[in-house]
Image (cartoon, rainbow, N blue to C red):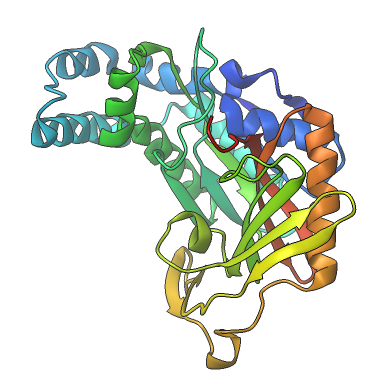
Length: 318
């Protein structure tokens, strides 16, 4: 078996399916609104390398990377990525991806997000935030299979390779498990921390939000609305509404694009008080379940809250 649905995954399975997918499985078990999805397990990547005789070729290139030379690092990691993407997907993996994609929704060929879920075997590392590829609004089984290969290849992005090298992590123990998840066509999205990441205050929740997809918040390109709240009782302690000139939304024909925000929404708050309270209640539930502070990605579509990711949060000073 190379594929597992979120309902068969849990938080302790990160060496099998990466941190993102493991936590999406755990959140699904809590009956939260997690978009339906599945993970292509970490072993599938190594099976792809083996049947296409890529392992020794990758080893030979990796052994000669000069990490202190940026151009050499970029050139050689690009060579490895090209090998992984050009090799045909093993039919036994492709079949499972296509079968699971067909079961995601009653709609034919639904839009999905294909995201990288990562970990390192025999290590507590279960995320490399922002270093692997994410694809939005992917439609059709053939395109999903293609993006899975591209996610596999992104384990050899220059940034990821350098991060592993600098931390002394063995690249042969990298777990890369693409997740395929129904797309939330969000009007508002963002991130939430159940501890103040700047001050370390444990009774505070920090929310950043923007129009469109969460990319508008996490990429650092745009200004976002910023909220600081106390947990008990839920009270808005600080609120800064930004001028939001750009948003990241669905593009015609698939994929996503940057677009200008409508003039009347530039200075308008992205969240209502009711939405802020719902976010806080849900976040506290997740924090209580895990027993540690959480860094949560979320989205609202047509007024419904979806949880897209959760991982352990770092407090100020950690």
